Image (cartoon, rainbow, N blue to C red; front, side, top):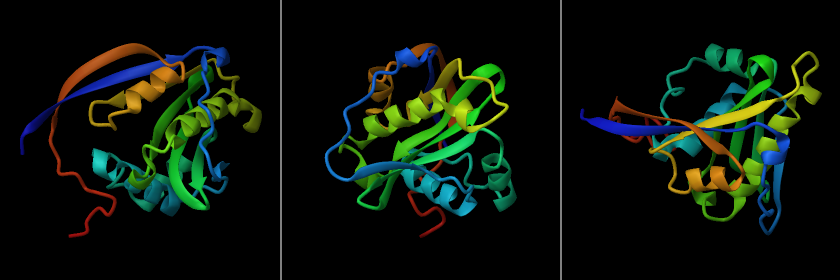
Length: 188
């Protein structure tokens, strides 16, 4: 296998007023919190959104690993539905000192380019800012951050910048190139 040069950009918002919301898409698009942690559903979202853009870090996780991460206080999954069909998701994770990371964000391939992504990112970021209100004992959110990389979708960085995120770090690393698993990892 060959190596691939990957640039990773870290972006942040440091106040709720940094969020620049997108216009809601036309049609029946709703964003709903998956309140019951479900390894099966979260793995479906992860593999379906990230399969064609080389998300592989969680593919080998056991059921118990998924349960552990999803069951932590301050971890939330928000799902966009287009007419009842899952279109994408955003996963939030509370960290120390009022920091919330947008761990994963993206759309299933069939729903990209339909203005759902900006809306979902806006909604998910707003939920990161008000996360402590749903989790007694968590510190009020003071910072929301995320990372994206050169393997992500071509419009990802523009969407983050249009939503008011500011770049605070850039890293370039060599990674071993792995085949794109697609939305059905392991299928031939």
